[in-house]
Length: 506
Ligand SMILES: Cc1cc2c(cc1C)[n+](S(=O)(=O)[O-])c1c(=O)[nH]c(=O)nc-1n2C[C@H](O)[C@H](O)[C@H](O)COP(=O)(O)O
Image 1 (cartoon, rainbow, N blue to C red):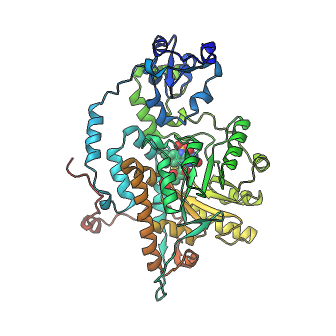
Image 2: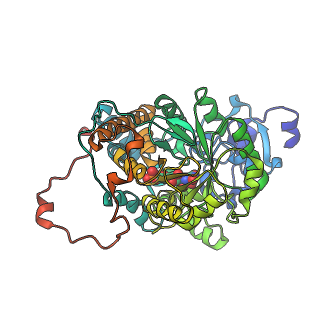
């Protein structure tokens, strides 16, 4: 086959169509044919999904789940069979299932964007209108999903101490992050597989970030290619890059140096995922897609295919990453280095002593180790201990603290800022925003946050972000995980709970 592709003559779709079985399985992705016969049983997403497209064009199934170069990176060159003449390829008719019809109906019943008042509303609508697989991947977290909920609950253990009679006619919630201007003390954090929720994937975030002057952190596992995202950025737009370190350090070196060359302003090395967490909503979705015979075979053949989308894209991550690698990173790039996923003060101190530019106190949105503490709780500990041991004051230009996880309101961000964070990462809300309303959704989500910041700075008595100081919060109960006080039944039953934005009668 290789001489065919070498001679530049395109393969015919009819030729590809003959290879449509487990014995010989070819598929077409982005106009090129690939022999995946020997890969079938290694595909973490299971062989069935590939066999469904054996001999056919698999591009529309492939695109949302895999970064564009996944197939070329994971198949040896001799399996790359070369271009296929598009006129000879049979169109794969996409059967619209009843549930897909119902989903499209709910999509048409969405409330107007004017009725979306907060980030929770996006989640409520997205859950009803986005494809189930996408919802499962975005909303899922590890094991019993305790940490994902604690991430948000922890903010409810912090109370404000607002000041009055300060002139707040003019308020300004802009700040700088790693020395770069940002219109608010938050950035769009790295979340994988943007195309699961919307055909434009991460480009929705790039464009909205440019419009609102916030920074986007580009994920290693984006659905869009890195260069596609960089090409969609405005001149001078500031972007960071989130790195999963590859077992093959040459691949990582190439990626890092290319990112620096393209103008990335900060390298966030993810350190809380030597293996991706077990996200059971995502896994269950996978089983629903498989017939039982496939699943039992998976067990016997030892290929653990139960991890859904996550495992399908992450087997390259190096569990051997360690502190000794930090010097190597310093040797291959001049970009500021930040560790993303630090979860205790001891590691934050080691990062400071290693001369890094900062840390993201984060548990990966609860998707990794369940019962890891919330980033905001770890922030309180890190500020106290690094103050005690190194005399550091925060926020600190030289060693910046970031927090992410569970943030849904500007008040969450302001609590983190008051406690010493430079800025806060926000993930799922922007995914839900574009999964439910496309690019306009992300634009609206950022506008809502601007409106909340404006109101909250006024009510706090803080004209600028610099005026949001530790005395403005009481975080004394942040670490009390004691069981909640027994519910006040009478009061609770009288309380009429707020309503989400709702679908018009679908
Ligand atoms: C929601 C989400 C988060 C992911 C994410 C994918 C999704 C759908 N993925 S993951 O597939 O591997 O888990 C990444 C990722 O690529 N790399 C990373 O560093 N963090 C990843 N994160 C974690 C993210 O960067 C933040 O830590 C987390 O989203 C913050 O919590 P909220 O979603 O509540 O804002």
